[in-house]
Length: 632
Image (cartoon, rainbow, N blue to C red):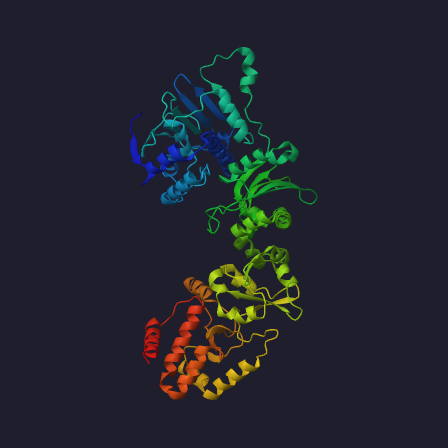
């Protein structure tokens, strides 16, 4: 080891993470080769892209390649590239921090993967490099960043510490030297595969990395090379042919799936694959995937969303958000354009006409693919909806051009216990129903128990239960579907088909009016509620709240307040069910004792608040009122 060596510790729990990863989880250790090759490919991409904007780096970006050296005599496997390289700070940041998404979350996912044999977790948590410890008991990384003078060496045995010292590398790039574990013992963690076999490595590369766009060479350091073998020696192992340019009949499902894992760092197979080739005004081809599960950063504002952009088979950038709308940010894949300029920047993309054409075409294609999935593969679509439905619904607000198509793709919880689409809802409406009824709130269980549904259930009218935060926004900005208006069952002036009161209900209302109780409760609740009225929507519950004016649910009110946004004054109306036994008892009690009106009003407000799934504002007052009434 060279002088001026600095010793560092990994972040806390790193040793446990490495041990769990190395010894417990991975059913297929071959993936460490794939991960290190992917890292090398990324380094070459980064150098070439940075050289486009920084001419001083152009001299370092010549003849990009990845080399693999096999040395059985010294029991080492070396993977080297001439890419961007790393500085000392990069080494500490990238190789000294395991699982940037959070070590505890990573370990939890690891244990879950172990229990369900889901296999490969590498890449998803930022630990691709550390997969090399599956096959090696010591790793040495020598690297030099393009444009810098000094090289550095990082070394670790995966024991929770690593060292950094100055190196002697003259050229830019990174070399990873792995001292391989030996198969001499019969310990359960020993490797069954000889990763120092040239043919083994060739097979792994053809399987996992054939589509990598840079040449991959293998050299056996212990093999004598005859002059006549030179041409074969110089031939790259991988075909370097972009998968999306090949005919679908020439590509196997396994190759498509492996390419998806390569670009997404996901360990599960995708739910759906979308191949698309556009010709005419804008020429491009795309290979897109719908994942089977949510990426960890799906709802992060600075998450890595978007697709990979290629121009004439040359990689340009990762996470290109300008080619796919925000509400389709779960889409993974590549887009290869024939029309864009190779020196295009993110700023130029935002203003480029071709970009808008590509985005429009991709959006139509994805939405059409979802429509076909919904029609032909309903089970897969249900999985998709449970995973990404809340994101897709954002498009109803943001994409006016495709709003109708998106609305037809949406599935909603129903008061009848199932999920329904808007088209299905309309097809089941009775002839005298002219509106689509809905209720918004925090979750399905609270909404399905709402007393506001009682009159609708009695009349067999279906109500949409909109429990996602985005629902309240889109439904308030979308007045109708086809010719049917959306109507909230929480609104004050609600009109129902066949809403006339029966004779018994009329009698109950008249008696309550005669007692004067309603007026007294209204007086007692001045400042607490906007109004107190009779209810025609309640059947089994004594009271509920409805909204006067524009409806804003408690959770949306809290959301706006937390964001520092002004919120309109809340105007709640308390509706009372004159036919409920509790209300009748209160009226009887009131005739004999008028001193408890304030307590009865407080109790009814509390019951209505609980029915909303909200917390009582003045719990002390509610408890005192309830105690006083029960005592009498």
